[in-house]
Length: 303
Image (cartoon, one colour):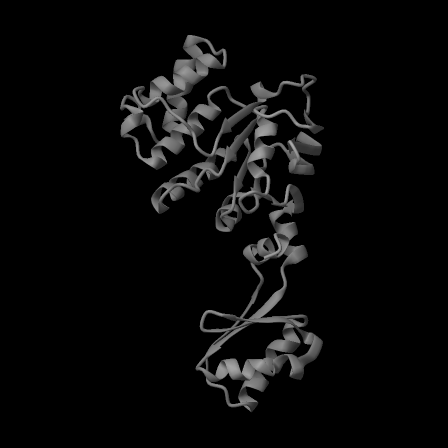
């Protein structure tokens, strides 16, 4: 079932257009990743969705809601959340719940449920000033969920965390997406592949590519051959384009070897093997794969 529809969203700051005609839909029960380099318009888009910025043009509508103010439907965690460090974790979550208009009884019950969900029940009475970065981020997710929103919006939720904190938050998102529709922004492709069902790649304020993760992979992934060997591998590769013509889409030096993007994988993997033998090239690794989501991302943003 459709949860949110965004139509031709535009945001201008003076003469600068940060978001330029963004349109997408998000279904209930899905986890979507908004990908893009810094400056692509991700944060501005999320702020408009959360009600923190008014769109210059366009519309945002929630299914089943006739109101223009959708803040009650949304839980939001900014990229750089700010906490009252003199409060305990429980006090902070309860405080946010009261700001959302929840009753005292409901706030107490819900806050403890969420602190347990995010793994902070043992630290609930500790001052936030003593929390680690990962703990603060998990606390931020708890406060965003306190009023049981229909949509959880997270802006770069793991970008500032160390590997342990990143792992904790990603595992938490895996659990949350089973119960709450989630939209998060990131420039870390691995995080998107690990957690999301849908992806949208932004560039220069527009969505360049969108779809389910499987659809995007199926539509855009292309076969590649990776060959690694001694120094002679690079001399051998110099004549490949001439020998194989249009069958070679692109070729680049990649690490200690050559990465070859081809048209017909079955035909080319045999042809490349034969060519290596013919030219007596010493090979230590021969691998057949597909272009990754990162390759697609770099292509979409023009790098």
